[in-house]
Image (cartoon, rainbow, N blue to C red; front, side):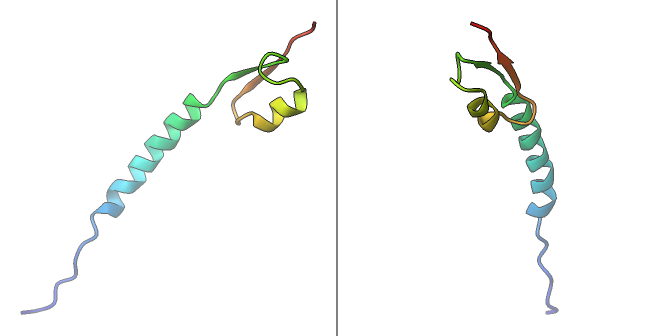
Length: 60
């Protein structure tokens, strides 16, 4: 009986799953950050912001 190479099927399914996961994570994590309501200092808001977050500085 000749040796048969086993096919790895999960490699084809992981790439689309990872793409879909990261596309949803990017849209879910986008948020408006209000200073001083969410963070007391502007630098703290910048440090904790994600790529698509909006930082709104409110004048008191």
